[in-house]
Length: 204
Image 1: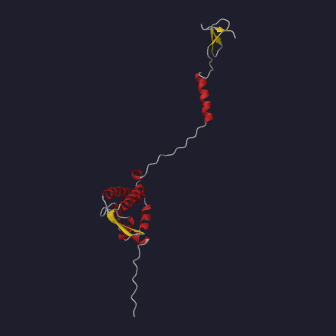
Image 2: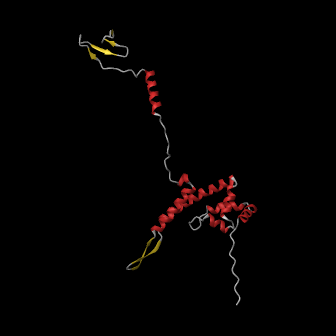
Image 3: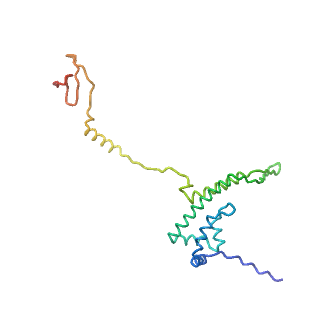
């Protein structure tokens, strides 16, 4: 009995093959960028699957892109557009019920529930939200307040305040007016000495 020849598995495109395709067909990279931002059936295609259909290896393509600043900027722009498409898909998924059947096994038997698959839709929305926040952090990423470290030397601040008080003359101690027991006149003490109410200096 003859054995059937084993089917050869299709080999995945390698790095050399990917580089050869990109060098021989310069427009291939532009086609790849266009397909990243081209939703099919209201779903944005995955870049890895796009590369497979175009006969390229995704890792080799990313390495080739990183070797040139212009190509890298074009790829970043395409990813930001892709983030916008993912955000639009979230609105479609949130507004479109998906009817399904949920099966549960209990001690009493198997029960089936038919209705809107809210958990499945929530997972789809959260996954796209996470991807969009990574592809375009400025628009779809979570904004967190920045942390600032401020160091204040209280010793320097106190010395500067005392120097400023001396310059302005506001650091002189002032006592409340007191009444002389001898004459009953009010004597005011200022920084220069004692003075009578009429402004004349008294002997201390």
